[in-house]
Image 1 (tube, rainbow, N blue to C red):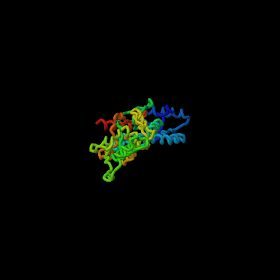
Image 2 (tube, rainbow, N blue to C red; image 1 turned 135 degrees about the horizontal axis):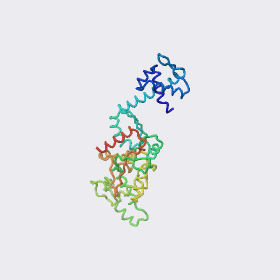
Image 3 (spheres, rainbow, N blue to C red; image 1 turned 90 degrees about the horizontal axis):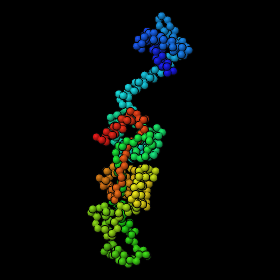
Image 4 (cartoon, one colour; image 1 turned 30 degrees about the vertical axis):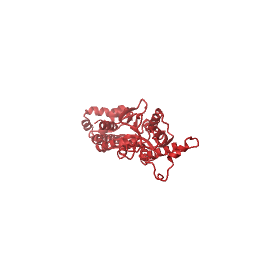
Length: 350
């Protein structure tokens, strides 16, 4: 078949023109070359394709069958050429992206908004999944690129850094107040084993003049500049907060959770209460309503911090920054996907 492709083109043009000379003129080859090609094609197929006369040529039944099929093929080729031309003119293309919900909302969407504004004819499909599932979709060629935090990859995949992010712990002042009050009460409640019970009771049992005076626990004293001096020396360290608070983290199957677990282990912080949530935006919302202490990405909560809806815990050892970037097989990137990656990088570096 491969050697007959040129012959098919010559046959097709001759059939349309009904004249060998006219076909030769349209194809910019000689008339004898057209005749010779048709003869070779007939010999190859074992059928006579034209009935020749002084007026020109007309198709045999076999020739008509071949012409009908070739018409469909050449029409498809012409349509493909027109489509490619439109792609070039209008930037038509498709990008399939895999990304987690949080990275999609806080990092990918701003880039997409600007890219689509400049390339309105590009079709974008988004698959929101955890990083492990994104990498699996990439292996199965169900997405073109993934947006993930840097993690060990197979050698066939390339990671293109885009920007850095920083993990942090947040909560509300009210939650810290209540936690401090609870822990103070727990530490100072007299027990039978406490040899100083009488002295303790003498100091804390309210009299008639103080029965309505509840200590002003405005803030955990470590975090509030205007807090009064605490009535008891029980201010909690950040380590104590993380170990005693309701600590809200992403679920254990998440790469970000595994990263934070390693950080906590390295600092010898052992939380006693962990609430697992599979969505970082919910972590932020739960922290903002005073449900506990949440580990989130600082870049995702700037509005919450500026409006003082949440406060950020100071850390003795800062959590190492992480890198977010695109992962892909560079041998399978389409021109449209390359264009999108380069666009995002240009936005970051400008």
